[in-house]
Length: 146
Image 1 (spheres, rainbow, N blue to C red):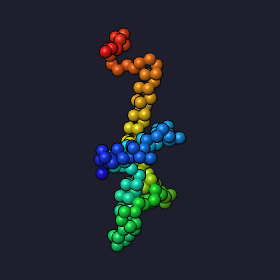
Image 2: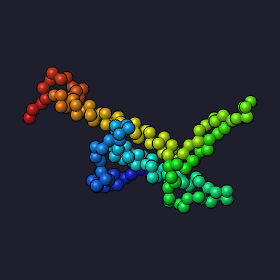
Image 3: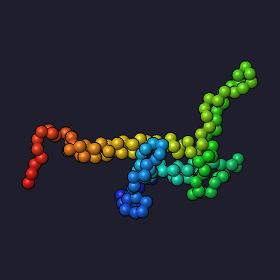
Image 4: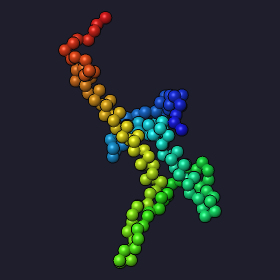
């Protein structure tokens, strides 16, 4: 479920609102990525809680109590092996996926969107600082005065 406008306003106005701290690997503002993921219902906590419901014992009972998240290291999708080869080994057809892998894959569109938004804002600021932006109007036409 995505956020309502009221919930979004509370987050933005609160102590956990946006800031400019960047992820050292991607260079994208961390809070922006996290907020976009939360808005789109793919934040880490939600995904880990959803995945916890898929972990069942042999009787079909949940291994993790409802409402609790699973750990990122838990294997959700086991590796798939191929047929035995001549040496008796079975090649890996599909690697195992952990909950963390699934979270990262689910959040990738939000990270990409955050990257585009961050780059666009930087471009607009640079153009404004370099003496006016190109907003699609003729740069030789002076701005209207009142």
